[in-house]
Image (cartoon, each protein chain N blue to C red):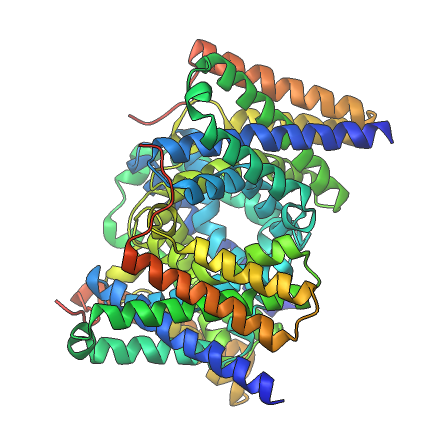
Length: 204
Length: 204
Length: 204
C-alpha cells in the first residue's frame, strides 16, 4: 500500500518536472499558450504513451487516468504564467530535476513492462523509451534532431538504470530495492555525465 | 438510422476536405504524385488514426473501413490532376471548408471517445486530436513546426467544440443537438479567429 | 515448416540490411554511438512496428521477439565499428541490398496483414508501410522531408509488390509463389528505377 503511494507520488513528480521542461522549450521556441500546454503534455506523458502503445496497455495510463493530463496541463499553464521566475532558476537545479525525472520514468517504465510480462531485454528498452520518448517527440515537433541521439549520456543513463531494475528483479531483489538502485544509477550517471561532460564515442 | 447516415456523410465530407488540403500542401512542397496521395491520406485520416490507437480502437476505422482510404487517395489524385483549377479557388472558400472539416472531426472524435467510455476530459482532448492530428503529422513530414502550435486559434476551437459535445451529452442533451452545437461553436470560433486575426497570448 | 524458416530467414536478412542503412545514415548525420544503434533499430523495425500497431498486433513482433531488436542493435554496433570498411562498399551493392530488403519487408508486411484478416486494399498499404515506414521515421528524426515522398520510385515499388502478393493470394496462388512473384516485382522495379532514374510525375 505505502509502496504503491510512493510509486504514484514519484510518477506524478516526474510528470511535473518534465511538463515544466516542455513548457520552457515551447516558450523558447516562440509557441503560443496552447503550444506551451501541448508541449508540457507531450514531454511529460509522451514517453509513457509510446511505451503503453507498444506493450499493448491501451488506453495508455496518460489518458485513462485524468490526474496525469490535468497535472501536465496545469504545470504548463503555471510555467507560462511564472515564466520570468522560472527562467531565473539556476540551470544546475533544472538539470538535477531533469535527471531525477529521467530516473523516475526509466524505473517506472521498466517496471510496468515487466508487469506486462515483456521480456527482460525489451523491458529495459521500454524503461529508456519512457524516460526519453517525451523529449524525442518534443524535438520532432520543434524540428530539431532529437537531443538524446546526439548529446551526452542521457538515454544511456536511462538504459542502464532500467537494466539495473530488470536484473535486480531477475535475481529476486525486493522490487523496492531494485527500483531505488536503478533510479540511483540512472540519476548519478546522468548528473556526473553533465558535470564532467562525458560523451559517447562518435565517428568524426 | 438517419442520424447514422448523417454522421457518416459528415465524416466522409470532412475526409475529402482534409485530403484536398493535404494534397495542396504536398504540391506546394514539391512532392511527387505518391507524396501527394500519401499526404492526402495522412492529413485526412491521421488524426482519427492517432485517436483510435490511443483509445484502443484497433484496427483504426481509417484502415478497417476501405471507404475512408479510398476516398482520401482519390481526393488526392483528383487534386493532383486538377491542381490549376483548385489553386484558383478563393482562399476564403478553402478556409471556410477547413473550418467545417475541423468542426466535423472534432465532434466525431469526441463522440467516438465517449462511445469507448473515455472520461469527459480526455474525450475532449480526443476531439481536438482528431481535428488537428492530421495537420500535425503533415507539418512533421514537411519539416515545419506544427501550425497548430504557433498559429491563431485552431486547436482551441476544436477543443471548445469538443467540450461542448462532451458537456452537452453529460447534461442529457440529445446527441444530435450536442453535436450540432459543438460543431457550430468550433466552426464559428475558427472562422471568426481567421477573420479578426485573433491570437492566443504568447511570451515575446 | 521449411517455408516458415525461409520466411523467418528472409525477415531477419531484411532486418540486417535496413539496420546497416540506419547506422550509415546516423553516422553521416554525426550522431553518437547510441544514436547509431537507435537509428539501426528504427530503420530496421520501425515500419513493422507501425504496421503491427495499426493492425492491432500488440505487442509488435519487433519487441515481443527478442531476436529482432538484438539483431538490429548488433548490426548497428558492427556498422559503427567497421564504418571505414562499410563506407568503402560500392553504392550499387548497397542499393541492390536495399531493394532486396524493401521487397522482403513489403511481401512480409502484406502477408501479415492478410493473416490478421485485413482487407486486400489495406493489406497492400500495410506492405508498403512495412517496407517504407522505417525510412520515414529515420528522415523525421534526422529532420528531413522523407525521401520516399520526394524521390524516385521506392514506395511505389513496395506498393506494387505488396499488391501482387495480395492479388495472387486472392486468386488462389500458393502463398510461396505469390510471395516470390511480389518480391521479384518490387525488387526489379526498384532496381530498374534507380538504374534508369525513373521518376513519378510532379507538378513543377
